[in-house]
Image (cartoon, rainbow, N blue to C red; front, side, top):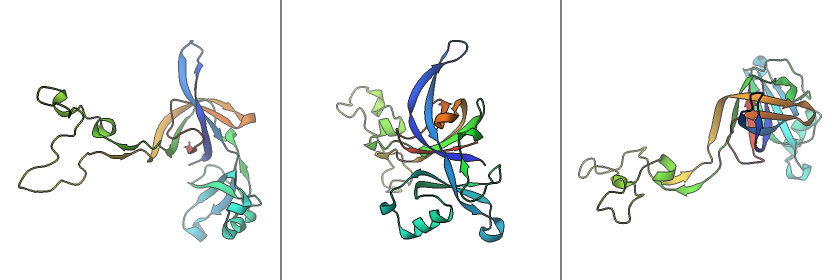
Length: 205
């Protein structure tokens, strides 16, 4: 599966040929360097390891510097493997946004925004106890009963309760590529993708 590592720039909107306003996300996709080529004979599977976004040498370990030196490049902040890449690549090759074309559909994976500790209304979409009927006083956003009484005398695993929300790996599938700006390494993708601005995303076709 071919793909690239990118950085989410932000959201905007464009007009199509019918004058319809389309919300879209701008992603800086690549260029990525091939930092390792996995083969079936050596590693047991075929994949390409890509590196993106230069990293300061003093913040890298000696092992990492030696690894990137083999590919003839500087240390990278983000490294991701892509299995069964569509085209054959060699160590040190540059892969840019030109592997994508306008109109095709891609999957985008990223880490969703962290929202901290949230209650059940925001986290799970609860409506509040009794939908704010009589006798509730100040417990309108409470979760209500969480278990039975004497038996089983415990709360079952997986019970939807308040807790930390966000910060999860999320993949959004079948997003249409609206524009490819090759000279600036930009992809304009319809809709929203997970993560905050300047966070890393993985684009797969």
